[in-house]
Amino acid sequence: MDNTKKIYGFELIMDLHECNSGKFTRGSIEEYMETICEAIGMEREDLHFWDYEGVPEEERPTEPHLLGTSAVQFIRTSNIVIHTLDLLKAVYVNIFSCKKYDTELAAKITKEWFGAKECSTHFIERI
Image (cartoon, rainbow, N blue to C red; front, side, top):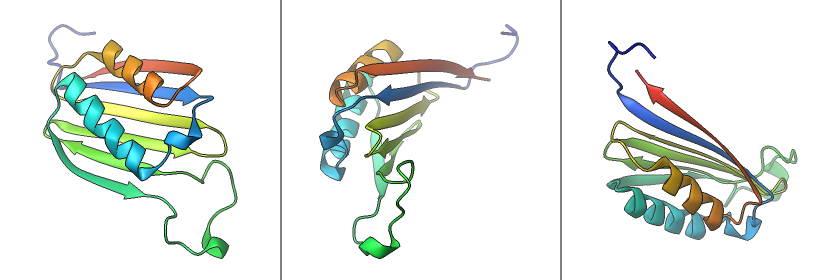
């Protein structure tokens, strides 16, 4: 990295597989957001969900990569985004903040929360 450029943000990208899909509910995801924010020192703001709750069965997609819950937890310094894929037992999480945080702790908590057998991570410094 060019040492003359200022770092403006930190993003942890996690791909989790072979998860406990019982944790893919709005309630569990909201608890996860509370837990992860407290653990890494982030101040929570609005939490928004998108899923197929309330959508008639005939209007729901059938492709496995489209069935799940998405949520955005706005934090004072940016956001945490999650996408679950129920049939594939996969979870994708991005934690982006201009405030530095413990990425190893965040990955450990996330992997344990969703019972993932596999977790790959990527860390990016945003300039």
